[in-house]
Length: 103
Image (cartoon, rainbow, N blue to C red):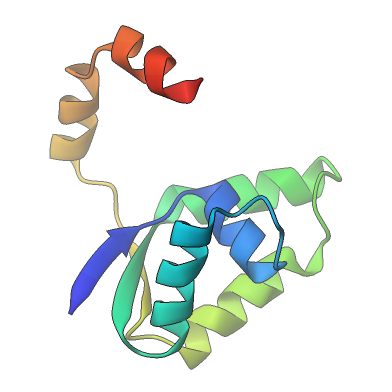
């Protein structure tokens, strides 16, 4: 089964059917909903969602929607721990490269 990793925004846009989610990303989330692929959710995403709720940036039911998704689709949506090797790898990524792709 193919695996993908999501970030906070993409996951929230999927949960709330927001049009800002790109067609390609929407297709991947739909595949996960149909048991075709797996989406890994870094545990920091839950922390960020709680933070956004506390700051009144997103509805309070957001965390419950995510928990429900994790409970009903445990094979297709899985929480994953961020490994130390990932943090080390992030240090080696050129920030100039990131800025170029952010535009």
